[in-house]
Image (cartoon, rainbow, N blue to C red):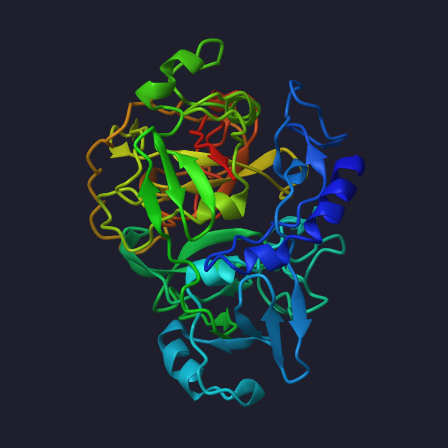
Length: 439
């Protein structure tokens, strides 16, 4: 299981100097173990099931330097971070950053979601305890390098409530009522939209300010005219369409759905076996690579992708139009069986089935956006049964915003999934889209 990891580490030592020439260097996720759809495995060879996942691709490992003055330099991204964290309301984050003098510097800012996500380390795990447990489980590991950065699990409430603020806001509403900002949770390895006013109880959040490299997170896309898009900021090249695009219809024979929706194993195989635009070194992107192309700030009735891309359309269980979740090659070590979920990015609304009782005033449900510009996918299978939200009527809502990063089961029967997963009733899907990358 370690052979492919050691090679990656050895080759990776020479990469950071190259990455620094890129204004938006995508840092490795840190994941160094391979998984099937349930557990850790020996890394598969080309042509075998589950080949092409995160741990098998050599990228730029994180490199930090503790400056000894309360700051940490990221030698890959060019960003400089506060070593410690703060607690604050989202509304006061900008003024606190402006007033900060950590390390003798006066140019601190609230990080964007792409800046903050560069610190995510997917060797983290939530542990085997239930998420509502107070106090961190003994087997939990933060999604952050705690040998460099200070971190705490909340002393009260849920141990996974370690959400950090960013300056990136959502153009739509979450939960049917909330103006949201996108935050990174270093306790459970997710990006979600959180209420700017703190929500019920007016809760506070964590914060870590940043300075340096103002170009980080800004894409520089070029349409190559051959069905691919290059990003000169990251050095990555993408398929213009996802797996539901008409260009890939011939590749869907033999897949379970046949319409571009793929489970995780199928998504890995689709990209690893793709011969397109004169290239055959395509792969399923890892979580940080896929996140690099999210276009935050787009109108709520459009996908969170630059218009240079094509994106397939889907229909939600209530018939409303949306855009799909997109698989990454990164396993999410969450839940009672670490290894059975994989990370996805929601390029459309991140849906949830919320119980109507006890939710308070939600306002009107947002209307569905128009279909995407690419090919179409069939409707997601409606999940019923299993453990999740039970009792009382539920309402399908955008609970975390387009651009959220969550996770779903890699395989199984979608009809047996819970109608709502977790406290926000996350809609789980086994069959999602895939967008391939190279470079």
